Image (cartoon, rainbow, N blue to C red; front, side, top):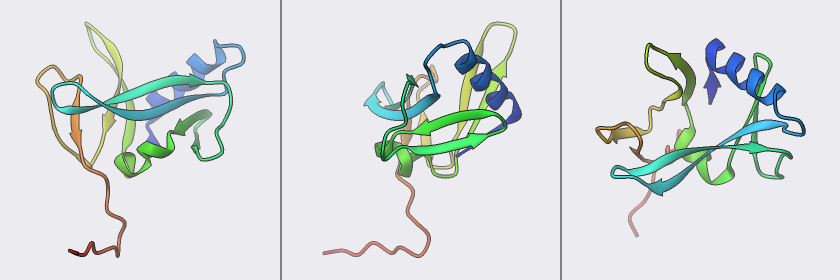
Length: 118
């Protein structure tokens, strides 16, 4: 996972305002009309199996259960007239619901891995 300059700046700014917080943790969970939702929580410690992304002054953790769903994803921060939000440009996303709150994501298949039928 990578962060745009805008996302890195926003994450670093938010973490700096939270005493004791070390990073923003990203994950996925089942929910919403399209099947899955991205999650974001504050992390006061780095878990043993968390994937650590340190980019452009920001620290983001990836929940171990979400790693295969987030491979190749770019995290951005968008501001428009009515809202500001983090946006995930995820090549593993197959579709999204109309309101944009949930997505259909398939886990990435590592290069060179060919699943077999048993």
